[in-house]
Image (tube, rainbow, N blue to C red; front, top):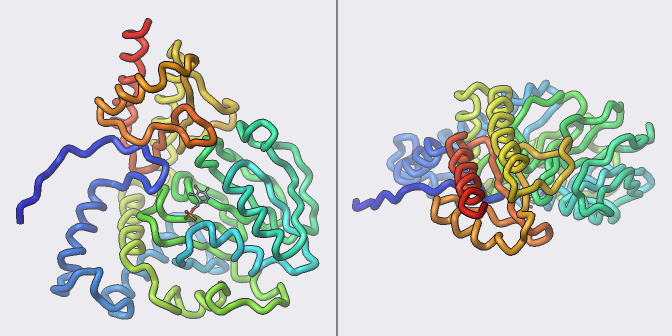
Length: 362
Ligand SMILES: *Cc1c(COP(=O)(O)O)cnc(C)c1O
């Protein structure tokens, strides 16, 4: 085999996003020959004992990393986080019930739209008016709400909930872009879901963690494939699961565990974010785009004080092999996504580009 090894770039894309180098290496090997079977992982039965053990390990790693007790079921589904926007209310919200939502960005907004198809929706707080540059605080949560939905990290706008509300209402949380990035108090959460392709694995699988005590209370018929209970009963094997994305996600969870678990990830993520935000705040050419106390540790959004210089800066990033820095079209400027798998060295390369750019344009 003639493999040309090109130098790997510094991947700041928001998603699909960076994966640990060691995970990509193992994934590559499994495409050739999985578990000594003499077959590729892409061509084996999902019911083979070798693949069943992958799913079992992915479930147990999820439980271990997040400290889940036996009330929680771990599912690997398809349809992306976007399908959870409707599966959550379809499975939890009775037609005469009320679901509360906090609107902190594009993804929350989409979740709210879907929930309205199934019951009453009460948007308790929103930062839409300020183009989602901060996280709303100090809202009242009605005690009789069926659940409170939040987006823990706003991938597009670069804000993050650094604390979750004190309430007995079960929290439902879209953690697509910060799952496994920090310890959480699981007892507050009824459902956590995430598309894998930000901080957990490749696109194609959706992790859903559900407190089974909340299910079966809507009184509505639910199509088999959209009923969490179907997938709980069949261990995510009701139909053919996305085998390869599950495998690569499992490898990434193993990597998180080997590297100290979510607490160690949090420490590393804080260090990386501090490095980059310090440069944004001290560099005369740049400024942050969000409220300082709500800044995301995963997606760092910033812009140039002089917008005319943006193209030149992006060109310098490209020369330094930093890719994926251009901001989301709805925000502009820049966004550096620094998920778990991004090493501090990668962030340092970007910081050095910013420093050089400032001295050259002083
Ligand atoms: C990317 C993203 C989504 C959408 O995920 P899909 O898997 O593409 O449906 C939803 N929520 C958040 C917070 C995201 O970052």
